[in-house]
Structures are given as structure tokens and as C-alpha cells.
Image 1 (cartoon, rainbow, N blue to C red):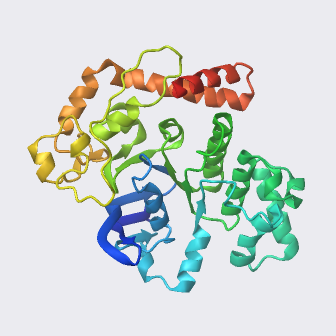
Image 2: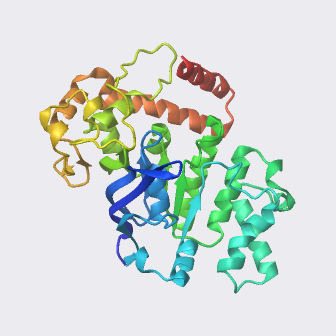
Image 3: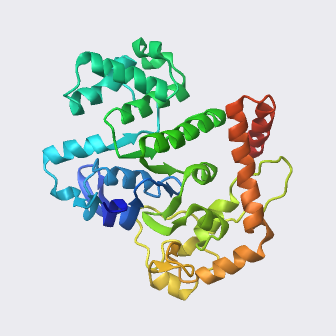
Length: 375
């Protein structure tokens, strides 16, 4: 059995811009020539700011959207060649957890019906009693009580609703789960609970996870590898510790510098990007990041950088003409050293873990972080 469970090859998704009754002919390149591999049993993260195309990529990987070009392979089989029956099987083995737990659940259905629906579709061999027993088992596995099965979604908090969504995703017995910002709509302390739940479920069910997120502390906490996206392209990818400790793309460097400090009043160096994010319909010659990059030179404005190996091993790759300069800048800037950046993130992880234990100091610490983020 191959170690690669999911593979994307030169994946593209373009949208034509319409203006009233007429088409302008402009294209939004939501995903533009993305290639990646996800290994069996790992947690693979896709990170980037809003509008970078990460959610579109997640939907392409599950075939919820049809790509403009390129191919997605699941366990060695091209999804474009799947029949409707094969795609039904794919839905059983690849499940999706949506960002908003408030709108992803049908308010007219009880929790029992929401979770048993995938069982009715994909597990026709189960009797009604067996399905009911399975629903109760899943509720307990995601940290809910059996009596919750008879309630409706509006009777639950955001964190509980997301647990229901996770239970529903687990019902069909998937091999891979894609989470599109699965904790971004939740409070910080509740995020910790859901993150730890996903980690536990991955080990218990031998799952592969793809997590789409913009919170770097969440990514660092639960991921094995990470891909950084900017305007539809992957600009850096590698083991999460390597990418966070030794960023090789200026965009990754800027993202890491924006992680809030865990201590109020602690000095930090924020890397300000030049210019503004280009229009999604803009045709940008060369590197798409060139108008915001402090390292940009003439070649960056003319020639698009190819994906290249950023280190001695082949696990850390980057699309930048001058990634060596980025590495030098990161090592010279005290705020961006491996030690300081890791301490900053680890402090937030400790808060997550403390929140799980119900420690009394947590609200004060979390309030301090939230206050700093507002200022």
C-alpha cells in the first residue's frame, strides 16, 4: 500500500468574472497550478490569509468542485475518472468538516438523524438498532452524552455543534477528513478542546487529516507538515517545525511575525508588507508577491519562481528567487530567531492545555492575549 493517500497534480480552478448580463473576460485564479502529496496517517495543514484559495483547494481535493485543469488522485486513482458510483464511495472515505458549526447542521433534524444519515447512505448493512447504537457510540467518542441524540442543533453551543459535525463526518468510517477552518468560529478555550479531540480521533481511527486554517498557533499545535498559500499558489511547504523555525519565503516570514505575543507589553517586531494585496483578477508578471516583498528585484517582476528545495533535504521546498536572503534575514533578526518564535507559540499552546484542565488563571491569561490583539 502506497504511503501517499491523496495527491494533487497541477491543480487549477479559474472563475470568469461576470458584470451584469455580460462577461468581462477577466479570470479569478482561485487555485493556480498547485501540486501536493498527503501521506497516510499525517495531519497536513494549508495556511494563508483570507482569499488565498485554501478553502477552494480543500473543496477541489474532495471533488466538491470540478477543477479547471489538473488532477486529484485518492489512493492512486484519478477522481476525474470516477463514475457516480465511485464518487459515492469516495464520499464515504473522504469527509468534510465545515467552518461554521451554526450553518452546517440542518436545524430541523435531531442530532440522531444528522449522524445516522451518513450511516443510512453508506452502511445499508446496518439495522435500525445498529445505526442507533452507532450514533450513541459516536456521541460518546466526541465528548457528548447519549441523551443529546434527541436534541436539535440550536440547543447546543458552538463547540458542541462542531463536535456533532465531527461525529457526522466519522459516521461513514472515512480514511481522510478535511477540516475547513474547523475551530476558527469558536472561543479560544473551546478551540483547544476541539484541536485535542481531532488529535485523539486521528490516532484512534487511524485517520489522515487535512486542516485549512489561518491561525498559526493551531497549525503548529496539530500538524505534521504545512503548505503556505498566497494568491492561489503554494509558496512554501515542509515539516511544520522546519517551516516555523526556518522560514524561507518572505510571506511566511511576515505571517510568523504577526503571531500575537502571549505576554502583554512584550516587545515584538512586526514585518510590514509593502503595498496592498493585488486584485484577484490582476495579471501579475513574475512572482505574485513581488509588489509586497522587501527582497524583490528585477527578476522577481519578470520571471515566476519555480518550486525548489530550500534545504539540504527534499522535505522543505519554496518558490522564491532569493530564499537564501530570506533565511539570512530571519537568522539576523532577533525577533525571528527559532528560539524566540517557538517560545511565543509554545506559550499559547500552554494556554490551550491549561484551558482543557479548567485552571482558574486561564481567563486572565486569555483576556490579556485578546486585549493585546485588539491593540
